[in-house]
Length: 321
Image (cartoon, rainbow, N blue to C red; front, side, top):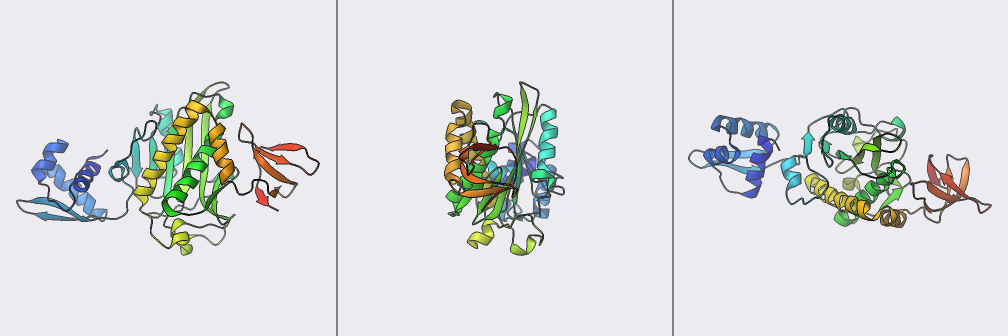
C-alpha cells in the first residue's frame, strides 16, 4: 500500500475528524513535507480535503476511485489480495499480471487498472476499457493441480462474477459458455484466463476479469460482436466500485479455497445452475446443433446431438437456436 493509500485509509477510519500532519507523519513514518505532498496528490485525484492550522486535515468528499486502501477495507481473504496493485492506466491487466508472475510474484497478487489502453477479450478481440466506470482486474494464482484442470478456473470466475452481481444488485446474471456473463442476453462481463505451464506442472494462471459497472449506453461502440450492458444500465443506479471489487474478491477467494479442497464438482454444479442454456437447443458456430446437457470435468460443453450422441465441444460460439 502506498503512502497515499495509507493516508486515505486514515481519513476513512476517522470520518469527519481532523488528523494532524504530525500524527500522519508519525503513523506512516514519513516527513511532514511528504504528508503535504501526498495530500496534494489526493486532491489532484479529485478528493476534497480540508486543511486547518492547528487541527490538520479532514476528508470531506472523494471520487469513486479504485484504490487499494478502499478495496482492502473489511476484506478478509485467505488466498487472494496478498498484494493489491491499483493503477490509473495499463495496456492490459493480464499483461502486467503475467509480468509479475514471471518475476515470482506471490499467489493472490491482484492487478487492477482504472483504464486499459489495449484490453483484450476472447479470440484476441478488443475489450472496450474506458476510465472511471468499470472493473478491469487480473489475479495471479499458482494452483497445485494437474494441467488439464486449469480451464476449470474460468468457470469458477464466471460463477463468482454472476453471483456477486445477483447478490449486490438483484441482477439476473447468467453464465454463457465458455467465459461470458450475460443479463437478458446482453454481455455484462467477460473472463480471459491465461496459463503458463509445462506438460505436468502449472507455473501460474492469470484470471482476467472485466465487468461493465457504470458504463453508459453512449460509451459502448456501435459495432459489437455481442450486445452489451452494464449494472448502471440495468439498475439505473451508480455502482460503488470499491465495494463491488471487495465483494467479488471475497467470493473468488472463498470459491478458490473450496476448489482446492473439494475439486470442480461444486463449482460445476453452480455454473450449470446459472446457465440458462441448460436443456436448451443451441447451435455451435452455426454448424453443430444439439441440446446442452452440462459441463464435462475439463470444462468442455456436453452437447446431445439429435441422434442421441454426446458431443464434447471444446471451442466455438454457442447461441440459442
